[in-house]
Image (cartoon, rainbow, N blue to C red):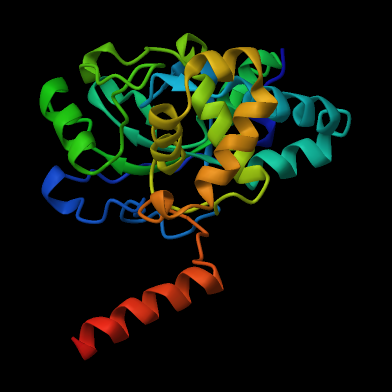
Length: 254
């Protein structure tokens, strides 16, 4: 097992932030933490997920990369320091991570004990129920199971190794990697794509022929049906544009 304690850049006392002062859901830093480089080493076992499922193909890809990087302490340190896990302090000062779930699970599977965490909000004074409501309203948790069904936030896993495998989340990841859509800062955006594919592609196809499902998903990602999704790269063809212009001209003439 590996520890990052000797790599940490030092701990700093945290200022308290009430719920009323957390106005920006886009990962605003706490008062006094004005440097994005500030982070602390936290045991992976102490991290609380804010989603119930991950794509295991993405986790495995990250795990293979970790194995390669771990051959050099310097490279491994640099890799982790550049990817601190953003977290909100919740009741009992537990770390609720709001991104990098796949990386965290890959580190866990690689038998790494700790990860660098960047605390972006402190709501630890709130009762559990109010805390979960606040996290949900900020878009900082995704209370859905591995089949895209809504669950009570209290049923989210208590540890990162308890997250489930979502095949459609895997499909969304492979489509993004292939350029089917762009990565965006919008929280849980790839779950939006996963659920989009879930409604258009039978799970049996995904289970028995992933390549065929991927090809189908790429076509869907480049269709008008996906233009409402975050990071979409859909562009109407010239023929479609000409047709729409013709319809518009006809309506004006009428």
